[in-house]
Length: 543
Image (cartoon, rainbow, N blue to C red):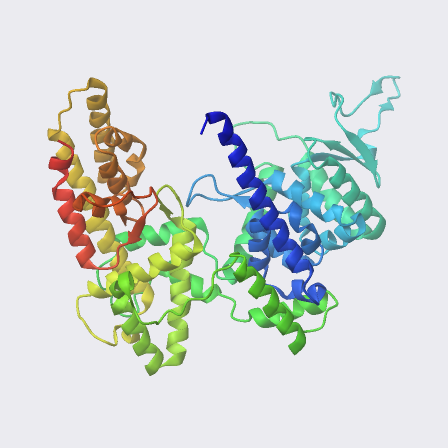
């Protein structure tokens, strides 16, 4: 097919995806009692719908959500991480898009929802789009000496308007009309909230303090963003989320922990997580419904909620629930140890089994929040699968084998044992052996040899620091020599090491084509043995 035809095929695929998303929204809007169902959905589920269908297409669904729901959705949607596992930052442009969607359903309705949210969050968002000044502070005046004073200069031709005694000046033009409409509606209907919001924006608009070298304090905008981020972290922790900083610290501590910690010597980050966990989500949700003027769900409404969930499962927005303890087949046979242990706990103590499920949720959240795989974040499904696989590896390498291991020890300790073993026996061991191979490897092409020398130095430096995955960019030199080996090595020295399908392909010359993202999590020692055999064949493969 000629190259000129390829863009049209991509446009056709994008059109089909857009239609599919639109059809999903139409299917949801056609469901009965939707106005009562949407306020009862978990904010995480509402966020998944927004991500799948696009925020603009979900305007009618968003209009039905309660302010408490939207505030929780904002916690998930308004923060972006530049790289996997890095700290998240407030996305002002996304906040503007949300305002446009809310105002699109009616400025008065948008003002009502905003007035029920944290004024610090809304002022931080608006403060990124506009500067706000008290009219009395910027009105030109004449001194007794006849001198005309203009307090604010050089505003140029920026968009500006006066609302409720304040001058609002645009810093960016996107979402300007939505911001003005929302502020006007707030001034008309919620004056107390409006005044508090404007005072916060005025403080953010003040000029930065002079640099005198005597302090290094945050300016008003930085302090406001820090406060909003801190409040978000507090809410997220109660809902079971792990911040990237906490997740990174936990995973690093787990790499350095002893193989089998004494009972009671739990990880302090995990212990703090479980102490701060909110165990009353149902009552909290009921209070949010009552605050929104809605009654607790009746049996008929619960059936309507189930119908919404069925539509989302059918559309692939959410995955069908998987039983943790099922008959293992195929690759799942490798998880036999963790399955047997969890079954034993369930039969022995159902309450303790619930605790182990919470621990597994913490581990999955920590991997999703603070770790990367193949230079990208782990999906929810991948994080859950990885946590189970690493726990299985921890059980297999526990010093004393026993069927009641998870009765006497928590899953966090078992995970730490598996994570430490995985880091040492796969990540560091592979990097160390590759460094030795690169020291003896000679290539005829000068540019390729230079790349291999740079890789050896970079890998050595990061291997000594215990973070060989940071030499990922320099690994491109291997791709020039052997592409499958390059793919396999990238997966093995990764922050969350996995077995790439290239290893099996290299062992089986008749193997079919493999995908760049084909891999499986390492859950048992037999897989590590395969990794060792591959690593010891590197000299031959790269020759």
